[in-house]
Length: 432
Ligand SMILES: Cc1cc2nc3c(=O)[nH]c(=O)nc-3n(C[C@H](O)[C@H](O)[C@H](O)COP(=O)(O)OP(=O)(O)OC[C@H]3O[C@@H](n4cnc5c(N)ncnc54)[C@H](O)[C@@H]3O)c2cc1C
Image 1 (cartoon, rainbow, N blue to C red):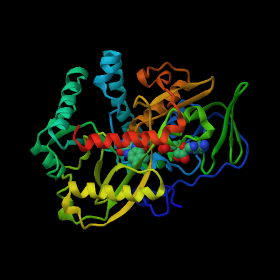
Image 2: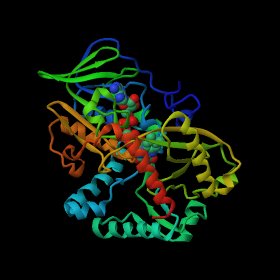
Image 3: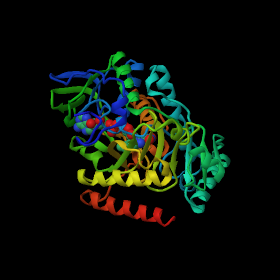
Image 4: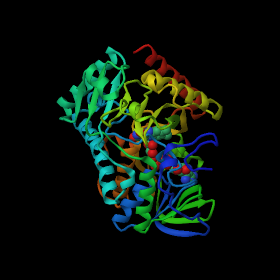
């Protein structure tokens, strides 16, 4: 099965256009390392890479293949934003905390830019293309413009500016929106090429990476940790759990703190040049102002369009059809052009809508819970995990592990998520 697919009927544009996957072994013996890292996505590999830069050896074990999780399936938006609201954070936690959170968001995009340059990840196509956010109605627009004004006044952010109806219509190439904002600092990547390039770069710096090797039990023992896997035992001084929405029973204590939520993507057939020129003509990326947001970008001469997925294999076809309807509502001229790629994955929601990084017990570290905006932040938190393991001081503000709360009554997680998602979509539908 293609690594970036969830089911045989699904096919990812990223997998179809990516560099060849690195050839990596499965673990088949017992090994030792300074640090064992569970999860071969951005979080785990960035941790390994940054540890290697500091001279600390590590082993990455990935249950499937590199980038199989969200890191190889996402939209590739490299964003400075958290899902949680910074104005609300300022009210509740004060200006210093809000400023630190804002700075972490900016630093995350800078981190991806630096890694792309340092690792020479040309095919990851990192660029500060600029991210648009588009509103469907006056209420949504007031929220976006209010936020842009707040960021400028309170955080000194100069890269975000409000756009009028005429400006957003021209920038998107659609009459669907009444206005929006442009964040010039917003960037994008080819997500699968980024994670594969990162794996290659880490391996070149001495990181051992094993695919098709699932951790089945993780425990601290006197003087170290033991990670039992499907292919052998890893003994290490420290362990990092970097499994995000795919966290399983091997990290039970962390699994109860993230809520896996499905997210889906479609991509059209290559569009004719005349039509292509009219969609996002300035080369920007766009998402909308809804709670359950939709996003779109052009890649490989195709319109790539993402949004909410659905629970269960059967339901995912309905999610793809809904995305196609939403896409043609925004771009009527795309109707009649086939959808050639459909794929989905899981994002990890948290109770406070923030990712968290921390330490459990003596020797167990983790970062997860990116709430669907983790391309930039997971790479940055990998860098911070490496610092924490080297016992360097870090200021993670509200991302610190002490704020990472378990979801009450985990048995009720799935029904509760469905109700919450339906409610959010209802509010979106009536423009609240
Ligand atoms: C469809 C979709 C679109 C998205 N779009 C965007 C976007 O445009 N911008 C943005 O910022 N964010 C986006 N995201 C979120 C972003 O992709 C994630 O936040 C980020 O990739 C998380 O990286 P990670 O390394 O923490 O986790 P992942 O990439 O999910 O990696 C976790 C890995 O752990 C492995 N694993 C799990 N359990 C075990 C075990 N027991 N043993 C061994 N391995 C194990 C899994 O196989 C998996 O490969 C999107 C996500 C999805 C699903």
